[in-house]
Length: 309
Image 1 (cartoon, rainbow, N blue to C red):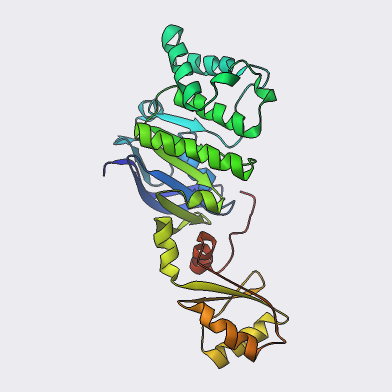
Image 2 (spheres, one colour):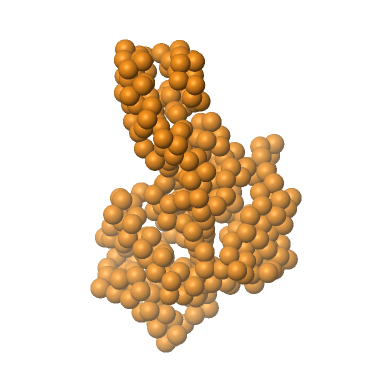
């Protein structure tokens, strides 16, 4: 598979603080590639570098085989960008927003109008083209943002937390449009997210924490690395109970966010023995298959806490 993005040993600092440390990955043509991690993990910094808003510090970035430092203008012509914060003029109509965006790309006349019609149809917005943006729901406004980014016929779409603030139904609909674009146009999509259900829809996923790569791979394969099932216990005295479980049942435990976590191939077999051995100490118990949150916990020993970036 041809690589559209190649990042090697990339680092970035805000003053003395390291936002990225030795990051290396590549993205193949036609992939939906996700960046998952807590706020402060390095997702937005990576987005700003790949979208050419930040200059490279140590490391190298190539996009479409071109050097990001030396051929920035040529790279920009091949990408579309959707920012986390809205970039629409809410007092203008939907079509007017797209017309002004087209002018920024040097488009005009019939070519511009044809492209607007195409993208309005593609995103089911044709019947809203005369509506002011401020009258649209959050989900519809996000579709207008995507239509703007598509006007230049980009080969690569970069989106920073594109569904923040949307309800689950609107998020699902938005991702349906992304998957259609990949299928119909072979578009490569890079997306940052902190929603686990969105990360599960990516072909591959880079999990970041404190500017470093925690894991990289297909979401299902990453979860399979944990193996089996995940058992969580809420206890009166979790530290004491952990020691007792280790001594009596000979299983490995982990304290995460005040809960005792056990990762075992057949963790369900432990439910009975645990409740029988520690009926007074255990307050509640949950059992499930591994999630991407569990992958993060497995790699870092803590939950994907939300910290301001």
